[in-house]
Length: 377
Image (cartoon, rainbow, N blue to C red; front, side, top):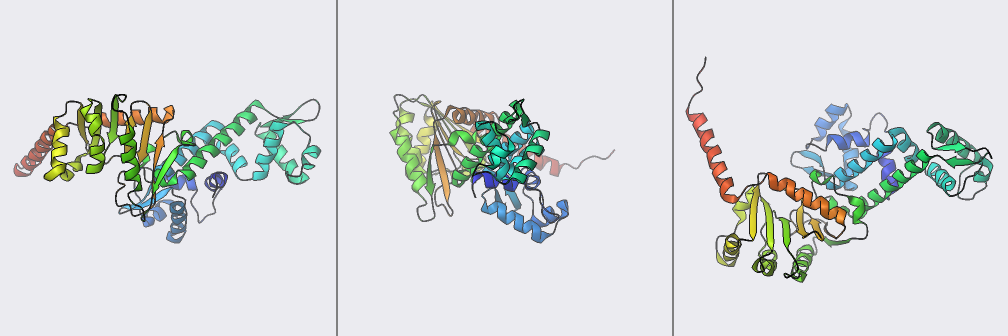
């Protein structure tokens, strides 16, 4: 499926047995929902729900979890891009464009050269005279075109804006499709990723047959960095890999500031013996290394090098059981987005000791509440 076909899929009105695609995506954006619960909420059959969900999974927009179905990063990004376009040009206008390639062809032809209906009908790549007439009539109602004093049809300023917005959406969906191995493994918190900026950027893909290709490429990338020129490293790290960690040694020893955020449960994965434990100890002792714990899951794996590079991929890449991808990007829009995301999670994260004290106090309070009966009035 190409980008315009995906837009059409999202825009097409469904029959009674099918939920509008964007309504279904919005329902799955905030929580995981089971198949039966979806059927109850939308008044649809489980068979119809199952068919739509399978389509969305195949398109890489939805994932199945232990709690039901949930939007993934690709779905969240696509939904945001689609929603922003409808807000800018209107639902009816986007539906008009997306549900017929003939309409787009006519408007694009008029943008290139104003023409009359008969002249349009004479062009080989355009549809019949009756189709052109219906398209022209509706486009006039939507204020996309007008007829000048010479009798030629031209795009209005709004028509040019609408066509540009549609083309922008196409480019965004092209990247959603092309970078699907990466984006479908991100979480919905990555909906704001400026996906069009990923065009032309490198993606390293890992497969079950080559599960370590992403790790190997990441290590090589980190080792290629000149520690004398790098001032600041920011990361999201949801697991410990000694090979990756050791690749940062030259940066750590060069006093490069390293800000790492890990989920709180990463404490249980810290090696306590052998080479891994010694490497962790060195990191704790280094004044330029700042490690914080986030009380929840992180939305992706992330590496930011100064304000120059972003490496974005799945939270876990070693031992991959499905196709996944890691994107390497130097576009400033993506870099700014990644830095803002890192800062957002940093504000809700804590130093390990501070986190443990907080958890200990919470545990003590819970035990106290259980031991001391609540006095009734």
